[in-house]
Length: 447
Image (tube, rainbow, N blue to C red; front, side):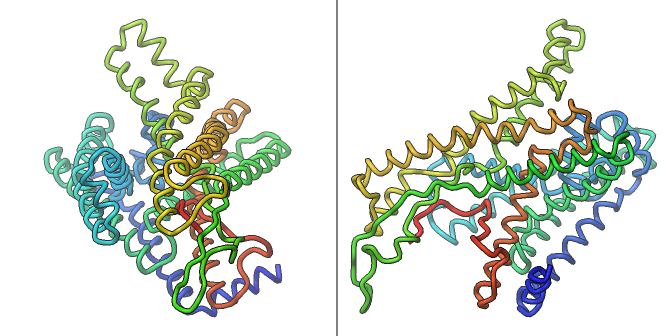
């Protein structure tokens, strides 16, 4: 406890860090306030009750978790930051297929500015489409919760929802530039974690046995520790550098050997495979809704809507493993790493530079991705296992899946920034031994 208080005092002594934390908290409070401001003409209490009883467990319930409940309350931030995330994913995937975008990605800051501009344009288009679908869904399924003329409500709601998402994008960029941590990620995390206290209280009230609730908490803590281990796990490939003169100093060779390695993350794809797999799993259920009288629709629809079923979770796990390999191939390019090594005069002991180095890195990456993908799939289906064992559906989502991975990843990233400020001012880090490694560490050569 004494060390914890001392760490807080050290954080407070650093003026820049103190100001960044304060600004971040203020902007996040603005986001939470907006999550309770209902759209003009929407009865948020009526909508929340109707939503919970009808669609709280489907895809809309899944999306509602990421916006802090704003979706179910029909607020100005009902779509949250998700359209921007969708646009970012689309641009990133296009970068793997379109040479012009690949070129921009390699042009440094100027290229990144251009990509950010394209991402914002895509965000506007996606937000207009999603807000139109959201408003159409409100009018069609919850007409009693709307106290406004339909044409006027439709136009105003689409404009406000689009403006709300763009405001959150601006808010996230201000946090990234002037606050602490990645603003977009923090907004998503706050939306998710805001649902935790209510779910925890409801679980405590509904659980008949205190012992069972205590076991639930311990199990969730164990899963969190396992996810942290997965997030920070790396495979270090040793690297040597040819000795060369830089100014009056001799660089490379065997100096600083402890830092000369390529850190390949066991889970280089992060949470993206789960998001992709989740989106794919929603498609069959949506398609089968258009053929309600078909016997195939009745059977297959049950397979793809029973979130605790064996078929659903087995298919879900297999998709996650496939997408983990797919996204890792996009996120980590062995050829680029090998070229960077060669330009800097580096080489892996016992491996020829160039193509052989690329093949060696690709082999190592394939080997570590397999256990990483299997473990990621296990984390993804943990909420279903917890539900089967008697945990409520609202609380079970914090036992794994996208919610837990995002929360832990963002917390680690933010703590890593705090620790870097402390170390730069010659204070002790947040840990007595070792260093905090965030999920967003780029794969590269640590020379």
